[in-house]
Image 1 (spheres, each protein chain N blue to C red):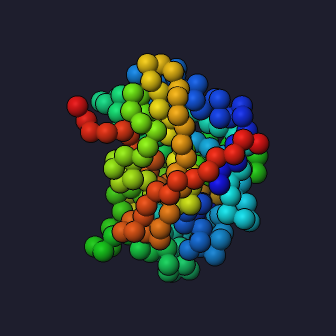
Image 2: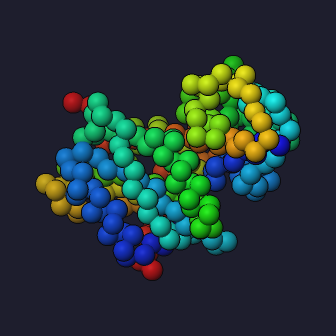
Length: 95
Length: 144
């Protein structure tokens, strides 16, 4: 069963679990299953249009799902999904 | 409160000196304590993906973060924060820093690097419940 790793800021919405096992054949099914198990995660992962927020990266093992088949990416037993909010910033205005 | 070993503190400041005049960035690994503080036990340096504007922007490759996260997990560590430098600018969070911050409860450590020398280092905790009410709060840093 695929395992989804939950980043620390979102664990308060996943029953404090660092990882959640979700039966799923695709990434989309896995994310839907996760949100079904932990509904409070939904607004942190998806915008009002139901699309993944721009800063939420989803990796299947070590690959960005956007460069695979996105939500349709097929999963197999032992696959790991990582939800990784982006990390960026910087000082002042761009000159 | 952020508790950090002196060696880790020195390491992240040195990183900013080494990458000057560009911003450095990295990850703080350790433990969330029951009293709400965070204890750092490991500092992981990262590359700055923002090659278009590295003197005033930084970005960490998620792929690199996943590796760091996995290695930390094997040591029993969690991601408790991040650090970056502000070359020739104050060690204060910018509007860009806040807009791009999404790891609630984590520390964002910023070092001012002035003419290749690290000067002030400050830590800020990202608080709030979602993108709409998030803010940075000054955070005490203690050497352990």
